[in-house]
Length: 452
Image 1 (spheres, one colour):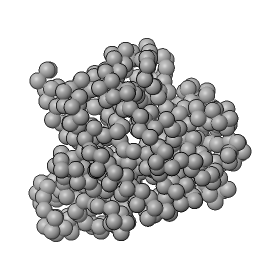
Image 2 (cartoon, rainbow, N blue to C red):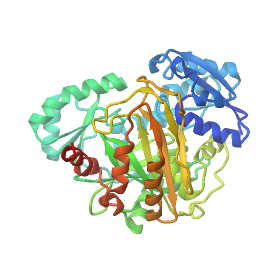
Image 3 (tube, helix red, strand yellow):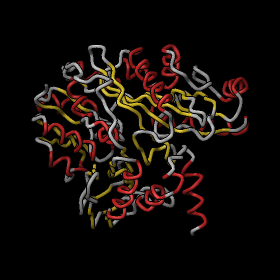
């Protein structure tokens, strides 16, 4: 096992990794921007180094400076967390070239799965169902219109290198496709340095369900059940739960098998997630693979009793998984909500100074936050400021505990999406487990309009 690692991230995920390292008696090195100098994760790490100005491209995306600090501090490995450089193949390769262990899959897998077009091709070869679409990059509007003819509208126009809904748009006609193409291509080039676009058939009101896997370097792949992640706004997940209340045991078993097959086909190692879209008849289709720890990993930890960061560290250190698929039992139900510093009516970010802050407590309640009273939420980073997780022996109990915890959550000085989350977890459709990706558009936004 490692004696010291550098955490190439910030906020609540940096704190989450530090907590596991403290348990394992592994020293931690934090890197931070000038804007994060007084942050909790900086104070909690054994060592901390400023790596630049607040802008992410001048700090948390500065791969060379992060690697320089890692080597100077004597760290043996780098944990990238999620977001930022976590799925950057070039960064992973630089770590390896400098004698550091990258806590994640190989650079070649990061490259292959980082392209949604290549990932579709790979999954088709592996025998995993994929959504009808095109598996080549579309150069211009005319190519896109020709491709659309063979598939049929409605379609999802997507950026191959995309994430977080960037470069993605639903189109219903040639006119909408032409109008959307250039703008989404430009956005993809700006955010990802890659403007490759492709088309997929649009699945009406699907469920977004993902399978968490662990894979070691000795050929063992274990699925850790699934998570329902259908409640989203602007294609960003807002509420996640495990297990899914929608799928049958038969569908569940098939999805777990497909995820294992996918990981084995590409020789995957470390923690990863195979994401699927599931239609109303429980047909499922590969959506993408996330080659890192997911924001929503706590709900899997709550129902399995595992520490996924600990498992990541063990795999990266070359150890065999001590688990078997049969040994990973499912216990109870867990729900996670993401707390954002944003206006719950417009979804616009709400930076500012936090004047009062009090986390909910109670049986089955878990908080993953990296802020406190006096913390400043800056406009430089993603507005997610934490996560609230509720576990219960049943889904009903988890829902009840989540509702009570949100009522207890106190944060003043900025706007948050907590009012929105309260409405969601109390909604009759949510309580029934009927949560498609259109939930916010169908139930939350209309309510805003009628209650103004």
